[in-house]
Length: 152
Image (spheres, rainbow, N blue to C red):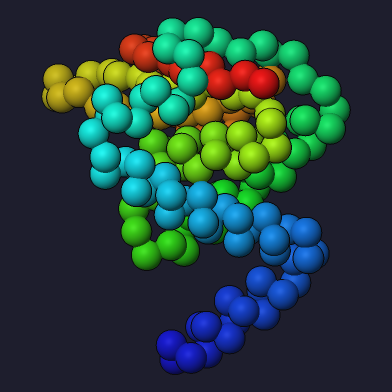
């Protein structure tokens, strides 16, 4: 049963074009790096995230938009299959790393909200140009408490 599942996943992976497979491998490595960053004290990580409480432009060229969509797709394809937690902050760290490699600007947002029981919840998402690579589904429920602009 397990062997059949592995073969099924391998054959599905082979169905993607070579450039997407390379991007998925990069996403896997970036997600691992994002998980490492999440374990570190935030004060140590935050200087590498960009300029605090600044935002990058919402303008983007067609090629930049194409690359951001591909990066987002690769991260969302790989993240459910990693053996570690790859939730919003790890995804945002990973996406930012992949954009940095391509010298593409991004803004990482950190948000907070209270749920119905009064408990606080946190969320992170990443934007490049007009496109939200990670965390877009829930971002409207959160109040931005921090943002980091990484421009080139």
